[in-house]
Picture 1 (cartoon, rainbow, N blue to C red):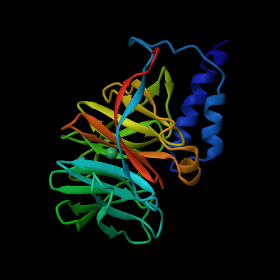
Picture 2 (picture 1 turned 90 degrees about the vertical axis):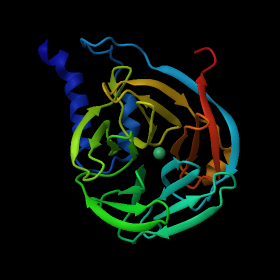
Picture 3 (picture 1 turned 180 degrees about the horizontal axis):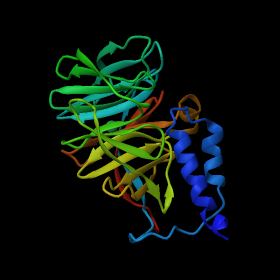
Picture 4 (picture 1 turned 90 degrees about the horizontal axis):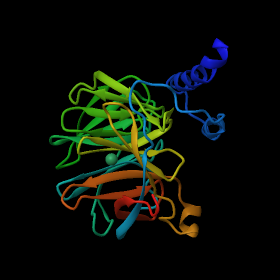
Length: 283
Ligand SMILES: [Ca+2]
């Protein structure tokens, strides 16, 4: 009886531990996640309530470099910065948010696979996937200012003004010191009572953390104090089927505080969208 009760929970713990183990999550793992047997929400002392379901309204559509394997997107006072990945093709870019034109691009060494991007003061911090080092840049000039080592995989990154929030492909968000990248805390993310894996590009917005979920058209809003997903955005259908056939997954989310809107794009996407998230019809 006892083993039957703890069985599913133990399985979830093992799955979470496996993905934090530094292994690349593979499609079979992602595909197997929804196949877990349906379970009731776990018994917890915290009040549990389902995440809000959101849709989106497109405010504007601008071109996006279809050669950019987007891993990070940051808006800062009218400037738009993008981190593009892949070995031998990684770069840091400044992009015209109106035309999508790449204003400046600096190549990253071929040994680095660039990942998430965040701004801290006048610096940009760019993660690398498995190289254990963050590259730092002067935002105004895109000059490289240094490298900061860290442990684990680098996926998404955002700054909430006091700390960095980082994802690694698991359901864990790690909080880091913005100067040293030393770990200062973290939280495990759950959606409707179950671990939500594959958290990717991040955006810190007014106390919440928004995350692209790898290999899905979903964006989630996370309460970083509890790890609970408080909203799920269905962002499917932004690209036409023809565009989607040549593109990769949705990944790239930046907040424009001036207009309280988001910029969204994806890996090899030909377009970038300015959107506003709104309650889904019927939800
Ligand atoms: Ca972002």
